[in-house]
Image 1 (spheres, helix red, strand yellow):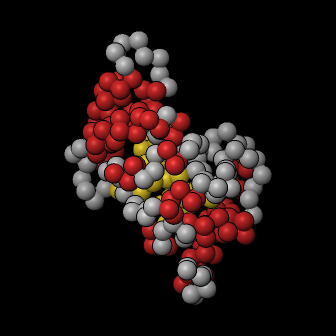
Image 2: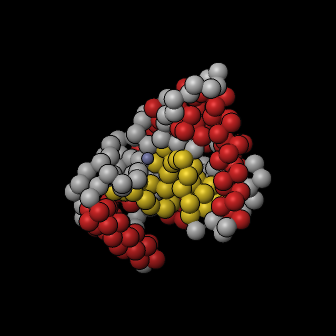
Amino acid sequence: MKVPITGPYTLASWSFNEAYDGDEQLAYELAELVNEEIVRLVDAGATYIQIDEPALATTPDDHAIVGECLDRIVDDVPADIRVGLHVCYGDYFRIYPEILEYPVDEFDLELCNGQYEQLDVFTDHEFTADLALGVVDAHTAEVESVEQIKANIRKGFEVVPPERLTVSPDCGLKLLPRDVAYGKMENMVQAAREVEAELDAGEVDLD
Ligand SMILES: [Zn+2]
């Protein structure tokens, strides 16, 4: 079971801070609480925790603070628990490859919305983590076709091999009408199954 949870840096950045000297201190205090939450989620059966830090991509100078938060978050979390980090809507070249130092197994990235123009950022320097690639746009109400999503999935193979690639929506789909959100998810699953079958059949050119 995978559980997404908002990270302490974003909670601190997007809060009205009237009690702490700065957002950095607030973020570290919140990291202790997020750590408590995650330990309990793991006790309850979660095997994959995704930390959502959308604020990181918009304030890249603080990437070291986010790293310190992540160190505190994963403290006491068993090594076999998968930890991912979701980042969205920013200039990735300002945080990559530094973020590869973070104690996470997978990065969940929004790239579909920008038509994968930032994909080069991740191919210029070896991507040493697993990649969860955004393959449907969370900001457009048009449901992408299965063929379009399959083409998006294949872009992920430019960064990591298939065994290290998972697919996901760019970001949360809460702002979309429900039928559109379901339509995107249905087509995404269909596209993933078809690409898997093509990989099994040796029909995907990975060079
Ligand atoms: Zn997001």
